[in-house]
Amino acid sequence: STPLIIHWPKVIKNPGSISHDLCHIMDLMPTAIQAAGIEFPETYKGRELAPPDGLSLMPILEGIAPTHCATRLTKLLAD
Image 1 (cartoon, rainbow, N blue to C red):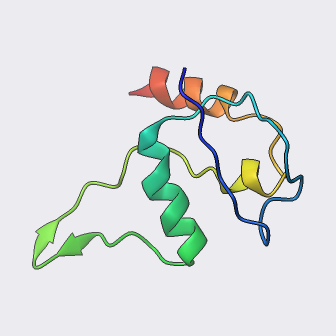
Image 2: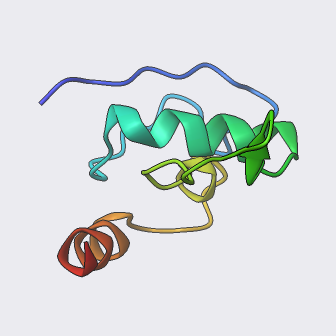
Image 3: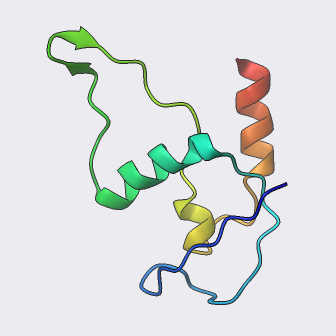
């Protein structure tokens, strides 16, 4: 596993904490989209776009969701 270190004092509710939640690099795009408060576009220059894979890490960063693992496994098994 590879650690992900995030410094974001206005969002992270428990600074210095360690989370053992499962995440992947593909989670960075959904996290950035949610953090920016925008929607991922369905089309770009007339072409349909597939939604990004991954899950936003915002619930983990905000201390709302205790784990990402169950959601991740459900998504992986559905695909």
